[in-house]
Image 1 (cartoon, rainbow, N blue to C red):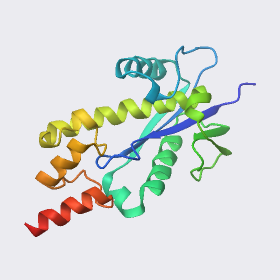
Image 2 (image 1 turned 180 degrees about the vertical axis):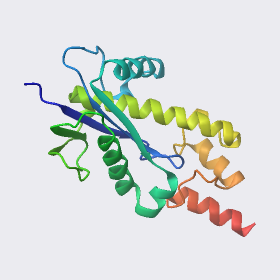
Image 3 (image 1 turned 90 degrees about the vertical axis):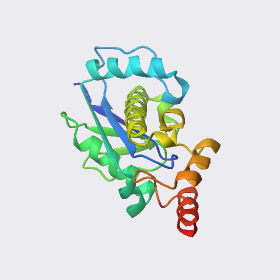
Image 4 (image 1 turned 180 degrees about the horizontal axis):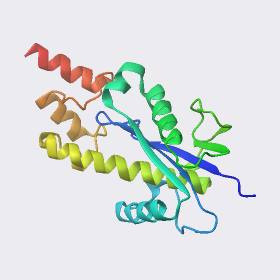
Length: 193
């Protein structure tokens, strides 16, 4: 009897802008996917190729997010848990167990276990990390079209020196997380001018 195990991971806890994105994946043991590992250890091209393969071969997958407003309202940890819950609850097959990357578990209707460095050791979590990262990068490219002055296509919302300079220059856009210190500083600076 096949046990349906969902791997869950997120992308985008650290950035100053955009959503936190979570993915849940139930892999098909009959359809092996070669090269699954922590998304941060893969090139963008390799992640994109694996993302397509995961979407076509997995028994079930889902992607969900919590946006910048939700992050500001409930904090990044709770928003991450919310995005993970949403992803698991959108799976077309109900998992028997859920394995989550990290040291915290979202509240779910299934047995759930947190695995530190799970994105490097559990294939289903690696697959989820890849889907979440590819989706988040895609969203940040769309936000770049809307707000080109922030160079989102370069830093994907992470607090690089360039991003922080642009944030101070232009002030935050609606996609910036106001609960994050660099964004708060930019807001204060823009109201004092």
